[in-house]
Length: 259
Length: 310
Image 1: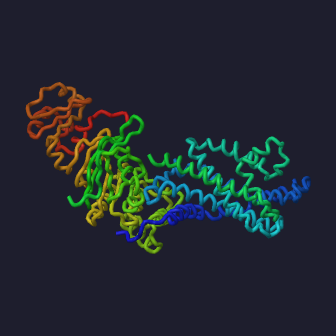
Image 2: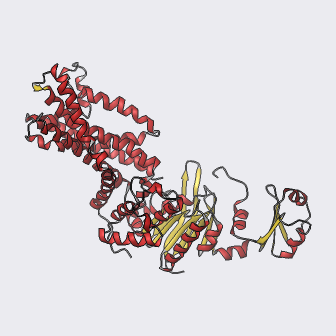
Image 3: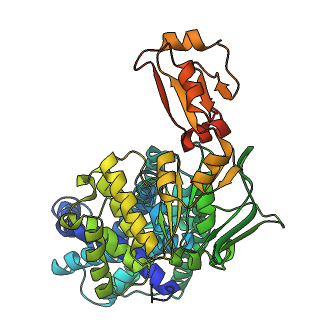
């Protein structure tokens, strides 16, 4: 007879998270190396080429401006991939969730565990970027050491948002609309590659509605040490969007998992 | 029967216009092996899912679902904690190896690492999978995957084992191995709930069976008793098409029942000699005279024609 007690909420979330960690760390080289290589390639490309033409952006050396944005976009892309393609495969093809739901795990444990895992990947990816840009002296070590925390928030936010998208998707190919139609424009228009103040005035409010704009603001503040009180609003935006999209994702995915 | 572990009263479940479970009631006692039989689409899997909370029943005042004293609508976790589930599809984690698959589930059940390690070793041994501990899931044969899925369901030493078509698609050796293991487990006091459309499986394993058709209960009781009460003892099947044609309009003596659908007549009787008389003119291999089994009863109840869900 099982002498154990029913696992607590914390333990249940941990065990879902543990499953993802176990899968990810199985191929530690192929999963763990690219996050460090990507920023290196990007910075080399900019440093060797583009950087000669663009010296500064928004009073920052261009390479610093871009690097602080990369901290966030790496987290965005990894969590978005995890919670779209990754989730869809677990949901529809491998039926991993069906199996997990036969154990003492609720659908919300499953989804929240997924979001926390997306946050963890965001943390790790932005940490990798931070290591590389710090080694090459692109950004001096300062409050920037806290930037991976923004990576975590980015991961959690895009994890929740991507799960909500996934809850609508019936065919895996449809995710390309999300990546091309939502994430790519954000990469270019949310202050990663150039300041949002350079956008046409009427587009600016729209850009501020976009989720990516806010973690970029926070990461850049941490990297440059230039803080403003309104940055708190960005933090609030991230938390609110995560809570709202997360709650809807749980509700909608539950309908798909529980008949 | 001792005190019941599962009680279901007036259960209903529909998907759109389709009635998957229609006013079903039954109860299952401690250490009993209870089988659900029915054609594909009869509502068996849905019923299993309702019991452990991954399908929601229709909310009606007369409905009662009780598993270990818990209602799956409000105490899904408590029920899952006391139960092991072997779903119809294996749904093993392809991204993990055999050991890791079990390790992850041990976390789901809140088991300590040491306890989990020991349990995994003994279960792999029990299911003759010890040398596959580090194997990838896709390296396993269908039979190994099935055994691993059952091992996974037993990891936390559940009090109830729910098996949804445990041996569908497996070869006879593996089926017999699984049956043997299930009998061992039953002896240890495990309550087993099984869905199947293999009649021999139900006959071998189940203390009681419930035959479902179109979501409704068609019959319930111990397999042998159901046979004795509801179908003639002997069956004559006509194998050859020519003989079938010749016999299709033949006169039937008293004490013989004939089922003429769909192409070949099948004769039933409690007197073997009456059937032998019918088969007299037929050559060896043109007919098959045997004792009736659950399959005959099942076909009698649910009909020989396919429904739109099969």
